[in-house]
Amino acid sequence: MKQRVGFALIRESLYRKLIKPSSAPPRHYCTSSANVPPLPKVPHSSKKGRLLTGATIGLLIAGGAYASTVDEATFCGWLFSATKLVNPFFAFLDPEVAHKLAVSAAARGWVPREKRPDLPILGLDVWGRRFSNPVGLAAGFDKNAEAVEGLLGLGFGFVEVGSVTPIPQDGNPKPRMFRLPNEGALINRCGFNSEGIVVVAKRLGAQHGKRKLETSSTSSPAGDEVKHGGKAGPGILGVNLGKNKTSEDAAADYVQGVHTLSQYADYLVINISSPNTPGLRQLQGRKQLKDLVKKVQAARDEMQWGEEGPPPLLVKIAPDLSKQDLEDIAAVALALRVDGLIISNTTIQRPDSVSQNPVAQETGGLSGKPLFNMSTNILKEMYLLTKGRIPLIGCGGISSGEDAYRKIRAGATLVQLYTAFGYGGPALIPNIKINEHSAHVLQHSLFL
Image 1: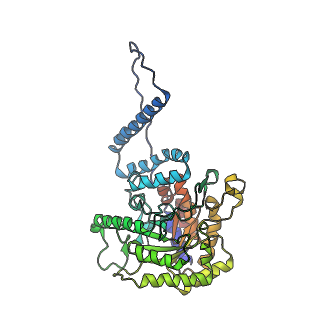
Image 2: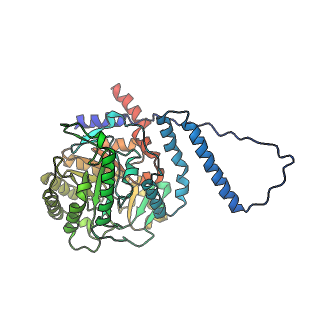
Image 3: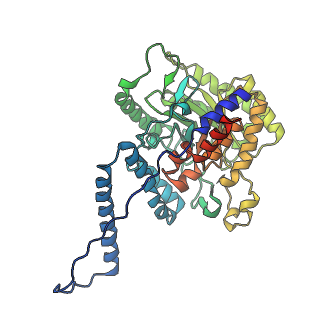
């Protein structure tokens, strides 16, 4: 355990800020107003539009001029930092509208693309695949696999889409997403809103073929036991499976998801921990979980697989579990050789840090900073119960490199973001991967 934590310490230690974007303020040129006839009056709204247009054109010209004088890595850092300017705009929108716009922007390539390679020491091998870095995007952001390429291009080591249900469903009535910005938190009761596995399968199939064509020249060397990246190229793709709200046979729903989507997935997730689907969390009981995992594993293993074999199967659990619940889940995971656990989903509890906020009274799962301690404690406990034999993905409340480091110290092999990415945007990703705090940790460790 000490050796593993030590490796995680060194890996996370190299998260530091390599780039400090700087840009000179634009110069303003004036001309004399003498003998110039007065301009016609322009409506106030029109003036605002012209100012915005002028500012946008100015930024584009300045950006082009800046790009021509700096190297690609520095310009890439500038682009990521520039996305912070858009964050206030999204904050004024309804949370779900802002979410849809963000996914749409990533799907259309209207987000920066990370050109700077990850530091080699950030890479790690899990499930026979090489992750370029351990920082991923959790399920719930790209529910319908609309923006896989754009999101991987932001610099995530892996992206998890879903949850995907067999039959399309709208989810719970709106409004169903609520911000708590002062607490860095979000409450949602979406209820597995999904376009369904048929639509998602077509989308993933098209993306899979495109990515494979574009990256065929960078495939792993023959005889290499570790596959670099995912099935379709750089970046690992996870597919999170859910059940329909009205379904009476949960196992059949997950099996259908496996049969339809596993060919595109680098790993699969059985999501039995959302608080927004009635009865779903009951599947975390020892007997229910054992029966479910056996059926889903059998469905996966009966399919025809090539040399790479079937995708790993993970289970995503809730943070609102008793010690006995955790012991039962660990026992099932070890007995059935589950490939990994994601810890954790959102919580139905309201910690003291948010309890006084009126929005906290809304029904749904709480995510973000207030979830960090709770989910990290569950992660630490599960690492001990599984004796470090099962890869764990730490999820819940990560908003900095220090948070990611603490998850890894608690036993995580990989980590995932969600709410903090919604608030911080693309600029958050390099700041987590390259964090100044970790440089201090490395400096300290070198002198021990």
